[in-house]
Length: 332
Image (cartoon, rainbow, N blue to C red; front, side, top):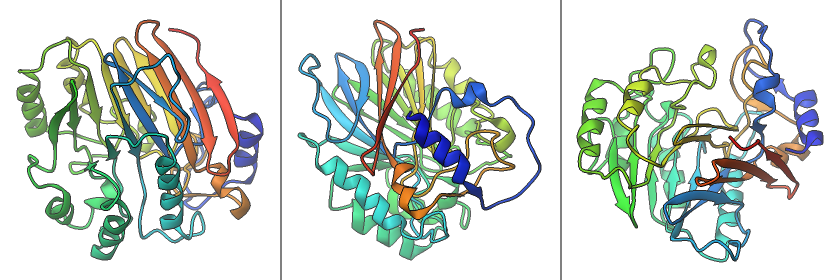
């Protein structure tokens, strides 16, 4: 990430919510943080998942099997100072997707479609996304807090199980959409019924098949003090140990963070609506306000590449304002 962008954000950001102070060492979090990235174009080539910036051509050496796009946390209906027009920034991200040389096969939205679960908010999102491409959804807590997700299920849950979990196969990859926002206990939770379903779903999938798991709240312990974790995710990952390639996509925290554990690559996406503070860098999570002329510098697009053979992960960020920066972690 561009150091100047990070300094500007930290210097100018003001937290809307208030609470107690933190006392942790944040260096370890910040060095693997990328602030700019509303969506990702994911490519599968020979079962290896990589991603790139919207509009960036595929490298000649990469023969992709297919691509898809992840966006997250559009929060349609939000209109506070952190972003008074979340519809416009979502549309800006979609324009970057549409500018790509080749259209993605589909789009995945990893939750918080709306801000208040109101019918008009769902209607507005449908008008923006429905005409564009096939979209797969999982809910965020803002989509389920009013009615336990009944309205969400009526619109997007047809053919799913329980509170909206499901799976599908696409060109040799097995996708699993999980719901961890209904049984909230200070952090995400899958629940025994969903875990039982996952075990059954994976039973017929060969270990050589790449797995893409997506849910709203992170399925790894990003920052449990803020609820940025899923309490029973370890039970799910115990079922995934036999698979050679597992990619986990989440939203919720409105910033890009990544880690690799063995064969599992974890990635969280930026919001298309507003940023949130880095873990522990503010009294509490919540919408973070930056000056209007810099909003598009914290809502952008991110390139994350994972080369399974070398176990190497690289992140390249490009904001909606056109600023770019690079962050590279050492090979693992």
